[in-house]
Length: 324
Image 1 (cartoon, helix red, strand yellow):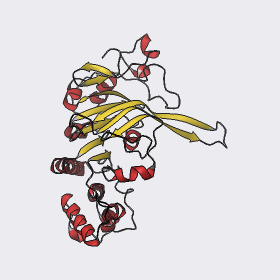
Image 2: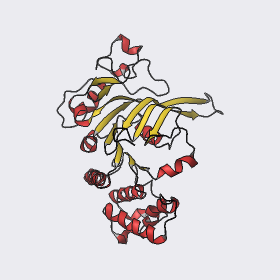
Image 3: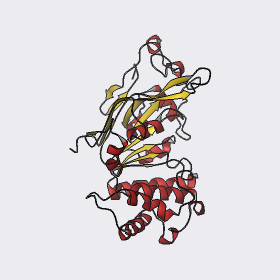
Image 4: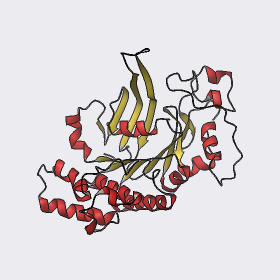
């Protein structure tokens, strides 16, 4: 893979879910969670995904790793098309792309000791040469992982309920790193933690990225956290990316009205409030044209009928707005 090619490349990705029941009134309904999403992720960078709850951030993260099947579009990982691979075909690639989940309380089996939880990927997956790991190999790697995330060897026989939220998330990070992945999707990894602990976990992720040459897709609703860790930031609204660019540039000069509204709501920024009216539309019945137009202070007649494409508005900046 050339250093100029994306490690992960999503092009026109669409994801649809069926909701409801065929046995009830209304039957099954199709809900489009992602609409024509394109995103490049380059080796060594952190791409932040931000937006309101329900905008599709977590769905996109899971779809990029093929935890969800793709209904349309294409996903390339290290130049290989993984869009239509079966779970059996994907299995050898799983070691190279891992996920850190949002809730450290729910993502760890409460009936298993943390030593077993961290060791599980090492026992399931073979070495790159196809050989199985010995018990000694597994034990040595688990000890190394504990040290990496700031835990002690005497923690191994304990159960998840014996740890704080921050420690549990460290355990989840250790498990995600067990197979030495190149790409990690972190799905709101600090949102369930106390504010005092969030900075510690973010600093740990940044340190691990530098030490292990990791690439992150970092999903969050806290813009201050994203500004701290993300190289580039993609802003999502109702299943689509509406703006993407270098993080500091996006925060200083938002090109899309929705981005400006999100940033104006951050406490302490001192930005003038951007008047955004109404609630987020239902994904069951999204607006025509620009999906943000019913709430946008800059909307004009064309916004209700003509959907803006994500286009270059400055070097390294893309925005889906007619007036960006």
